[in-house]
Length: 216
Image (cartoon, rainbow, N blue to C red; front, top):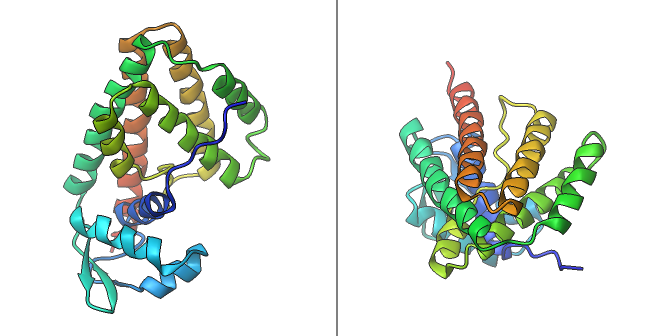
């Protein structure tokens, strides 16, 4: 059986914070405590500090000496640009995975099980399988630079305050199954289009949450 491969802790923390920032859960000018985030996520300060450095390089936060960080102004254009890059690169990865003959049987089995039990599956089970699926596609694309770029863009499941988590999980699982079936058929362009639709819906979720968080 293939082992469950997950992204490094610093990348996973970056993805959690990135999603929260894009969804408007933190407001412009709000301070982020290094210690507070570490305690909330149950990790040491080191991977949080590394995540802060990555987010600062992307223009999402501004680092403060010995004081954590401050959230910078984020607008819808920033969110759109982020997801448009994911659409371009993950679409290409999916197309390459299909052409390269990616093995999808085990992932499909897990997804069918998830679909049948979506109402009782824990968030962590869904998120781990979601991450594993995307990583497997990136690896099957067989381009280390592409893999690196996509790892840096990763922001996890794009649920937000304006959307039902369960509804997002259900729709995403259906899309994941269709995506893997197209890859199994070696249909690169179909895989690219399904990935585009998948991430476009995620983009809409986050923009809706961003708008809701900024109302009034």
